[in-house]
Image 1 (cartoon, rainbow, N blue to C red):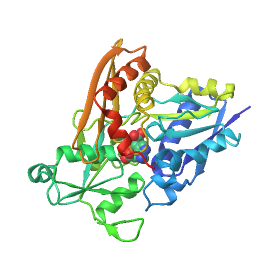
Image 2 (image 1 turned 45 degrees about the vertical axis):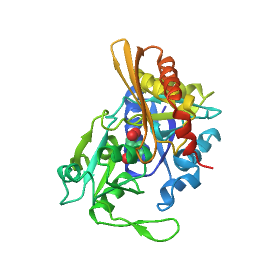
Image 3 (image 1 turned 180 degrees about the horizontal axis):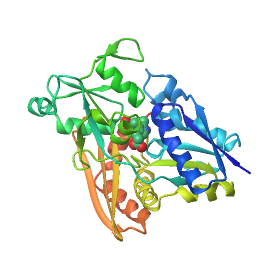
Image 4 (image 1 turned 180 degrees about the vertical axis):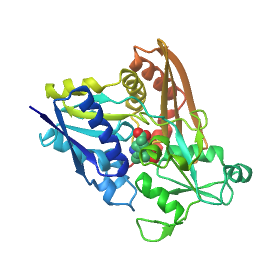
Length: 326
Ligand SMILES: NCc1[nH]cc(CCC(=O)O)c1CC(=O)O
């Protein structure tokens, strides 16, 4: 007899592709499961103009509503991009039951027709604009192309590319418009998930643009005491992604990073060793605090803590507090 598993997700093209991946893996691991995908339109998706902050940041905007349905027992699990999950607070009653094997964690440059990477490099960005909704990407872009204009740009991955190509402006919360933009910086994995990887004009190395904590990892949450779902999710949990999840999110936890903090954390594992880099940057890219440490891969949170402490010693707290929403 089939056992139903209801998984909640946002209904963007990217989120559905991620959730279908979970469904495929679950069905392959346990053929008795009948995986049902339940689509939500969250406030973060329906409001394409506002900054996300008034909706509680990325966490509030994309995550809260679906979590509520799991807590209420209307869903067995929910899908999140790990990098959209707030890292400075616990979610009572819920647990990350699975982290899927990591997709490429890097960021990608997407250009409109007629613009090349060479143009951006030669001009130091002068006369060009980049659309992004991430303070981290904005700050790194300023470091690579010091004179570029950063434009706060909203939309699901596929619609952002459409806006770039159609030279659409971005509407502003108070009325008015900005743009159009000449380029976008997006998660490589997001581009791939929406079938637009051929639009990647340049892949930023982690050295050029350190990924955000959890970037490229899909997480599945379920209720702490739902043992049946936890057991099924453990079948698709990738232990390597889990180690990176734990190390990178420990940095967010110790630094009390909020959704508006320009912060990056990225780990790699080589045999029994993990190397974790993290950074905190001010929005204009003016000051960068970066740290890299290597430690034991089986104690990821210890390494995360050590890296975060070192960032604090170097003055990270002042930058993070300056950008904290009221
Ligand atoms: N903020 C939306 C979001 N959440 C996760 C991804 C990409 C997939 C991932 O990194 O896991 C994206 C799109 C983007 O950042 O361009």
